[in-house]
Structure formats: C-alpha cells, structure tokens
Length: 224
Length: 211
Image (cartoon, rainbow over all chains, first blue to last red; front, side, top):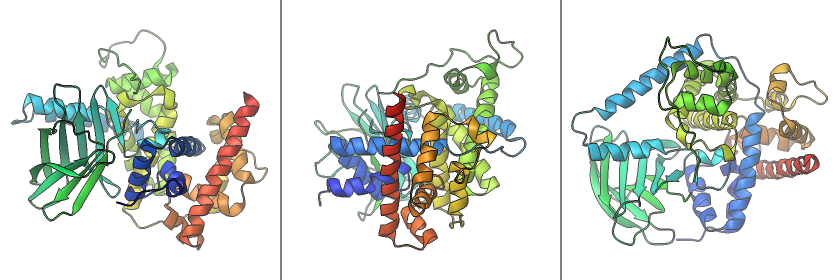
C-alpha cells in the first residue's frame, strides 16, 4: 500500500478538523497521525480552531414545544435502552459486551484534537476500545476490542440494509497485513459477532468485507 | 483517557423537592451528570440551557427548521447516551454539545441535495459586517477567544472568509464550497486551509496578549 505522506496529511488536516473530509481522507489522516507527532499536533491545533468557529454560531430559538419533545424522546430512548436489555435470547455475557460498547463511544477520538475529532473515531476506556463502523458518512455499527481480560477479543455489531449476507471481519495492526478473524451473517439488516483475537494480534483498524471482497464499512481504533 | 463525570447514584423522581440551588443555576457539568442519570428535572434544564445553541448550529448547516429540529433532538439523545465520555479537559459542555450537533448536522446534509447558502450572509451572522455591532444573542456567547476569532474572520481576505464559513459554519465539503463559489476544488481546499492557518495564528496572538 502506498505510504500516506506528511504533506498529504497536512493538506487534509483542516478538512478533517472541520468534519468535512470524506471517510477515506479522514481515515488516512487519523491513521497517519497515530504515528506522526508533527501531524498530530497540526491536527490538534486546527481542531481547536474548528471548535472555536462553532462557538461563534448565534443561538436560535427552537420551535415551540421543542424542550418537551426532546425530554419526551429521551424518556423513550431510555425505555428502549432498558427493553433491549430484556430482549429474549440475549445472553448476559453478550449484553455486557454490547453495553460496554455503547457506554464509551463517540467523543474522545484518539487524543489528537478537540471535540471535532470525535465525529467518527473511537474511545478507549479501561481496556475496552470502541470505534464506529462507518460506510461513507453513515455509522452502520460498532467495533469493540477488549484487551482487559485474560485474552483479547473483538466484536462487531452491524446495522445495514443488506439482504441476508455472510460477511467477514478483517483486522490489521498499524502496519501489518489485513487478517480475517471471523465470519458472520447479517439477517434482517442486523448482525452481531464476537470472537477471541489470535494471540499477539493488536487491532488498529477493521473492515467489514463481503464474500467477494468488497469492503462494506471500516473502523479505526484509536489509542487514548 | 477520558475523565468521566460521575452521575448521582439515584435520579430524583417527579414530585420530590430538590434540596440545593435551583437547577437553572447549576453548573453545566452538574446538569450533564443529572441529564445522564435521567433526572427529569435536570434533563429538562439541560435541554433548556443548550437548545438554542444546538438548534442554531443545526440550522446553520441543514438550513431547514424541521430537519434542524430532528438534528437537535438526536443531538440531545446522543449526549445522553455518551455523557460519560465528556472530558472537561477538552472543552466546555457547551462546546461538546455544539460539536455533537455539528457532526450530526453534517451527516444529515450529506444525504440530501445541497441547499444554496449565501456565504456573505453566513459570514455576517457569525462575524458581523465591518464595524457592525454584535447582537445580544451573539454577545451572550462571547468570550475573548470568540471576539478574537470574529475579528480574525473579518480580517481574512473575503474569498477565504467565505470559504471558511461555508465549511466551518455551513458544514459544506470542499467540493461543495468549490461549487458554491464557482472555483476549482483545489482552490477551495487551499482557501479553507489557508484561512484555518490564519485564524489559528490570530487566536494564538490573542491568547498570548491575554496571557
């Protein structure tokens, strides 16, 4: 694979910081800054500017009744959250994993910038790393890597409008080759899979791949 | 590693009188903790405190009140789900909410046809026209950094200022900026990047002066 240079990275840092880069550009930059302190610093400072720009947007009074609707929707979301936990057929172990993932998503990115970088990256908390699984700009699921137990393991939860399909999870470390670590089915637009990782394999990025090799979605796991 | 805001162990149910300051006087972080704990009173106060900001940011990007309301509502749900990831070292709760709203709004507009946007009007709305007084709503969100950034925006060459507000406030991608400004993609990217670097330099100067 062609090396993504510092020049290319710096050229894209402003767009990534502003949250307007496309998924591939964003992934290229975030992978690069993981091992490049100079570009990481550039991204961090531009992220500060991007965040400050958002602060300039004047507030706008929302439509009448918004507050009540928002609070009501929140109550509904909380009930759904509880209902999911009681869904038949979900083992306690599996639920623990799903909620471990749900609890730590979105904000922190990989320690390289302001909140702007939380758009689509990952969070690592207490040996549990999660990353949004993205197809273009759409979040289609979540990748979770747990390294806190006796043996590391990986899981994918996927929500995609696909026909019944068999897909595979491929992972790679920072510079290593892609390695398929498991296959699972997507049925009714939903699929979930988890498995221990092979010994010695650290995960920095993952892809959801069809049987024919087409990449459906990807995720980057950061380091906190 | 993020520093989590610890939620109260129990939410206060409806009808129970809270002891302590009125909820609208609580600091943002305390409100967020109560919000995460599903305390109805604190949740309402949280939404009330940030709804104008969140809705304003959503409107600046999606430019449609109905779509902006959807974005704003989703932003509050997302904030609730991920409240534990809030890290005060990275910025204020207000800033965190703003970024959540912006990212959701950008995701929302990417799947819709581009709505034409007036770059000059957008610039005036955040930076004011030359010498224009700042309205009370903007003054409410003012700080030294905001003042410095607003001044820096006004000092940018007009083509760069339009590009950066289209991208940074309007949420347009570089190719959409190019289309809106009738310029090549490379020129749009250069204007966005150059403007960001100039704004950063101005912010650095302003911070050094106040240090």
